Image (cartoon, rainbow, N blue to C red; front, side):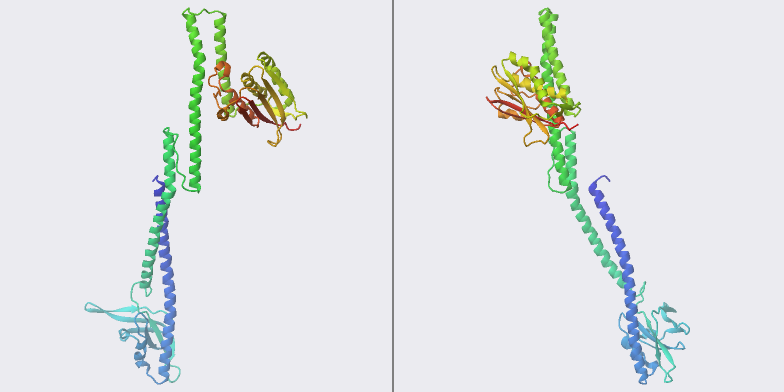
Length: 477
């Protein structure tokens, strides 16, 4: 039985059956016990009342042998019959006519009385023993004050199981009906609840199966705020993340294929031209092939770097790095390129000495290389690029804020949210040679985040761009 709903119904049905059996058993025993206790008290009261009446009648001169008329007053339907027996075991009187001819035997030592009533079965008569319950009540019936008699109560019920049996059966029937109705109600409620509980689970199962077959848009409706609702929300968030990852994966495969296709096509075309004798295999041609090979190598290296960063496998050799030294080293590496492009490259040092930051010098230099390369590429001749560092104002505690500012053409607002995406170029018209593969800023973001910092960019078209990132301060030695 694999259905959760069927299992719930089976469990509730089993528990209900056990409950019904337990209630019936306990009620049967309890009702019978309590009924017998009540019957014993009622018999004792009835015998006591009858004995008091007979004793008064005898004291006033009545004959005990003629007390049947007096006892008949106590002969009521559903009540015990009464018999008066003297100390020798002789039946003096009875409350009901069916006991007038009864055969009695009295054990004077234990005051045990056996009563036998004649029963007619066909053409034969037989004696049937009747049950005596409760202690007898003694009476004085002689004028000498010594002649005694005993008044016994004889159960009026003759059904199997004793006088309590009809009452117990009636109570049990009502009890079984009530518990059975409760069990059916429990099954109905369980079925309704199972629809509420199992329904969302079945919807989740269907959505998972659709995702298994490639439907990344599968979602489930959230109809509650309980654990099932939280599970549905978590599934929708997971499905959204998987759909985004699948979109990024497909986009990345497409972008990588596109980025690799152009240099490979150029290399293949030039090699075929050399093979056909159209282009000579001179130094210039070989240099062009070498340049395309370098572009491929750089693209593959960037992809490997980005893949390691996204997987959290970047290895950082963190040491204490002076911010001023890092800025000067980065500026020195690009000074010649800036001079050749007619761009001023400056370093703005903070007035107070900055604390050392905890960083990998090589990775930090890689961040500056990417940012400076972009800044110089997008700054026209006569422009200015500035490297700066200062304490993080009101932001991350214990961090230094680095900036790369340029006076270039700026970036349109709709491009700013995507600058750190893979293969993204704010100016699609730029070629790979002038604009790169679009992986530099994505790598920069992962490198900064791997150090525990954050990176932001602000820009306005025609007013330049500011890229800022933070690096945590190195702990004291």
